[in-house]
Image 1 (cartoon, helix red, strand yellow):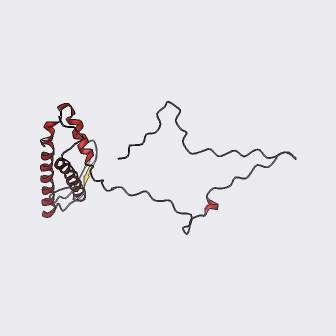
Image 2 (cartoon, rainbow, N blue to C red):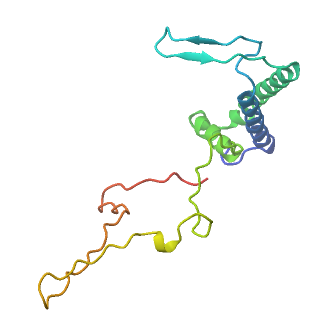
Image 3 (cartoon, rainbow, N blue to C red):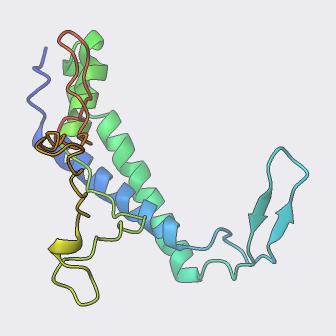
Length: 178
């Protein structure tokens, strides 16, 4: 039986192209109107949630052709990858794991961010922003109550950083980097 780490070059290339085609199709479908054909739009609140769709001119002939072409190519690549002769060489109980490794070995392209980036805090040197002297207001020290006595020791402000987890308890997890 074949070692699952040694994928044939054509299989790996097919999986990489499949990732690329799917990313292109996903991005194209995101930018196209919701309806393929022209539609007046609608608003319904008869169900368990309100559903609204704006009026749309539909897709153009070029967009329809491109979506069809990408879907056909996605289908061809899916058939190629899933029916590759390599899978007959892998033990049946290892095929799912091997397929998963292939998907991750040929990493998909990163998707563009669809959300707005968080606004950045103004820099101290920008005009109209307070300087570092205004960053933290000073608290006056309490005055001694009796002659000859000294002011009490200032206390440190409470830390805003979270406490580290106690030994033996799970701490915050960070996803593994790829």
